[in-house]
Image (cartoon, rainbow, N blue to C red; front, side, top):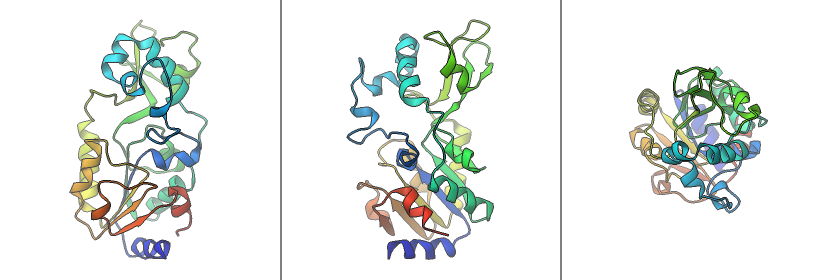
Length: 238
């Protein structure tokens, strides 16, 4: 019944915005962060929250890259049914934007064009000294603990670490899309990471839908809540 209700909302909408978190990519084999088997519950020499901080990256780049290559740099993952459906909706002119907290690039791999990557992407890496671009394969295949540029500078993934701010242009684009949306689908996110989660407050459209395994702070504001896997839900829609 919930699937039918969501389908009706999709059919009657022309400015859909999708807001997604780690749960969107778990069906592609990428672990989330806060589940019992997620990254934040695995044991390393340092807590993942500390490793993924700006201070830690600067002070311990070797330890950072050991964790990053092992757990974050997932280049073999493929888009799942959720990514593919969103790309189809965009091609049909129904979806006007994807706002994602993920850094895996799977939305673009599925064909989505208007993607606002709040936390950056593993597919972009830059020298902190000269700004030269490096693809993720360079980071993966580098035979030294800390990848460096041809100029000798330290290479940093274009991902937003703790203690770092979001990109203003990305946030502004996401806000504009959300404010104009008539249907907003929020999926695979605990809605506890700010400032990203705060963007939902800009939505003024007709229907707010949540697809998530667990309860979130926004449940009371939603018109429809579905407790299934994101790919399973969107894959059953047209």
